[in-house]
Image (cartoon, rainbow, N blue to C red):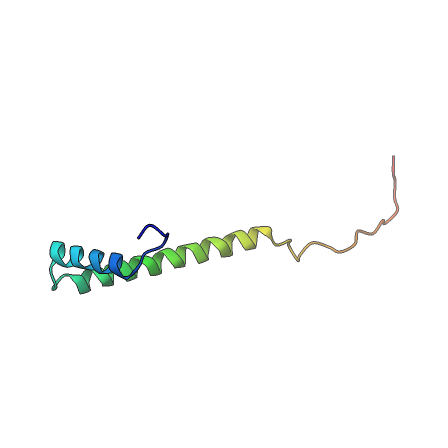
Length: 74
């Protein structure tokens, strides 16, 4: 039980507590809401990573080489 991680007995206990607290009819609604929340969280993380990668990338519109046209250097 204290070896680290959740085993079968712990998961069964959690399930029974949820079943007692919320009832069998509300468990699908709770699971659906939890799944929707996880999907939204993953999308937000992906969007944030995309924004960070856009910021980190150098702009490709910068000129590769600057030429000296001559002229007055004073």
